[in-house]
Length: 127
Image (cartoon, rainbow, N blue to C red; front, top):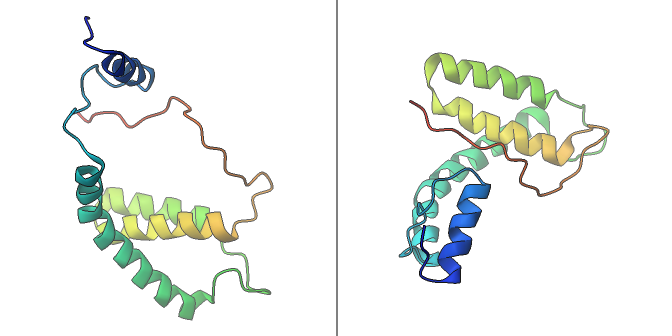
């Protein structure tokens, strides 16, 4: 495929690397357009997360409080995923996000760390 410039060449190279078809990136996307699109959907979701975390503080205590019991966030997360697959209630997805957040914040996994990498695993298109 002929490329008009190096930017197009590297865009297509990246798309192939991450498993996307070539030329899927819209050249007219600006940071503002991307920000506005994500914000439109992210902020209402995060607001629901925040509200549930506030209620959780009353039920489970403040985050990272000394002497607080260790809750099994991973088991709860998996349980909510099963419930979402069964009934489609988005509340379960918000709970999943919060359990992931609590695990990242308070989790005691012996190998807990953050290392940003592209493992080659990506969401696939549903057919």
